Image (cartoon, rainbow, N blue to C red):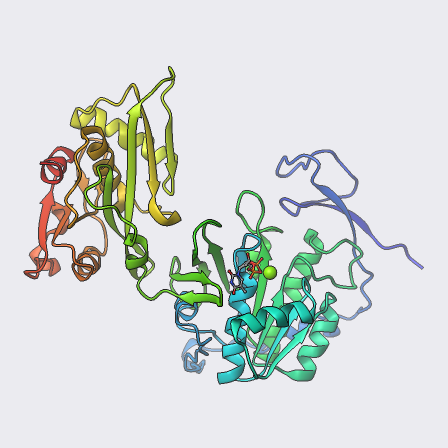
Length: 461
Ligand code: TYD
Ligand code: MG
């Protein structure tokens, strides 16, 4: 008998080496090579290769002749989850849901599975991390009740797939892809080889039998999905579960979606009875805003297709150290440094001896340049110790010469601000364009500004 082929695989980048090395030659990671044994392939002829079953049509077809299947979407029964998926689950799609431990991945999927089972058809929830008892005791809290929901506590991929073939469910959930293993590999669950194998096997099962499948993925310390990047290439949709452990709200974000818009966002609140969708996140993020406090500005950002108002807070205090601190939570640290430099040079604010702290309230993260003007406004308001008006919202990108640049989807932002009761919006002059259909509708005054100086004059009288 031939001995199985041994390869050493880098757990960071997936590169292979014939022998162990202290450092991966591809990505330079230290001590990341792990021994993996590939199983002997039992299939010799390419025709019965396990990959060949995947190809459905082997002859090329003319574009015009390909029939369109109507974009059927199956609702998960949770509006916010459907929204991130681009309107619901596409049959035969493979979805990866990543997030930190304890953030609520299993909770959300159990809730979605229960709804799905009730309205669409039987669901198989394969839990490799928890026993059926544990899943059920969580289900009791979530009020799952009597639905065709099958629980399977199993770690072997081949066994899970047997059950999928036996039950042919309408949805399969695998919790999690890092804890299942295939008997084709001898390496431990969670290693690159196993994770890749799991993703590929579930991909084939999903496409062949047209069963949508959701995989739960763990994330590493730095917040990226554990396992190789290939996982993200294999699946159709990648969702990230975000949120601060100390806040009750959670955000599910689409970072890749073959069937919908990316950066689409679903907002939830963790309650004693599971995750509750939050249809109006602006209200949630602004709920604890102190009125008349200096250093606070409200920005209208857009996540995917959804406008959200969030509060940006800044605190500027005299530094006691030679090296002043600049701390940003929820926005990019480098972006803050840039904005402070613009404030010093173009608006004449002196910040050289001050510590500057900027925080996005409620644990949100904003990476849009549209938030620039709100950061500048909050910092200036804190420096001068003068509050901004409670009824004013801002948005706009700040350029290095202190100019305010126009940003996309201005009308959507203004509409949301007006709806949330803001009577004045400071925005880039380039966005106040009659052709853009963007004149105040009487309820909300629009003030276009060209430079940082002009904006601060309007904001802090
Ligand atoms: P869980 O879904 O187990 O997280 P993950 O699968 O991402 O690791 O979520 C566990 C957390 O959620 C736990 O800290 C308790 C909390 N929780 C609630 O607050 N209310 C609930 O109804 C449930 C089921 C969990
Ligand atoms: Mg879990």
